[in-house]
Length: 304
Image (cartoon, rainbow, N blue to C red; front, side, top):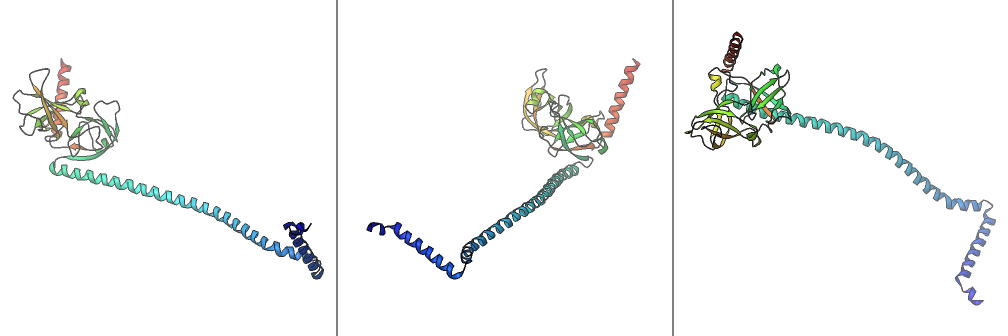
């Protein structure tokens, strides 16, 4: 029994009894509302804390809602700014491209004062073409006509083979229909430039009808001769347009002549911007002579 009075349970019971006795004593002294006041004194601080936390939570939710609307508005503003900057960047690169074209334009114009030049951009490529033909964004309203030479600052690309109001098709010098006079700048030997599918696959053209004693050799520079134009036979190209570099001289498989394989200065499959020579010295006369010869041949055939 003595051990029970020494246990923690007994001591705890004494504390509870003491608290109950104190509560009864406090109630009898302070009146019937004392217990309620005591409870309120304990509960009220907890209610205040709860109210403060709840108020902060409501404010936080409101702030989150407002922040979402602000973020959406800010996002729209940023998107607008990005679009404006992208447009400015596009305009900048366009101006930069035009500036580069004008530099090339002026360089060629200073060297060939008789040329009337028009800058153009490649807007489409013919997927069925084996020789790299393409379409440019300039047409008859800009003064382009059929057979106008098409060049870059590096050299000859081809000629206009078909014209629409706002666009034109360009056939390249690597096309099988290409036939025009060229000249070696080193020894002035002349020949006829042409191409075929096998050469085009290798990115080459050829200068044919070279005599056995020719001194044309690898490394020589080849340009247009302009002979057909100057003789009034209706040639497409004026004299002196850069064509390419000789890579090899070989025997023709069809006769005793030689031919030179040429690497063009311009790869038609990669060109993006070009210049069209809408007029040059001798072009008008050559066109008139060619038209005259064509009409004479037609009339002669009809009379027969």
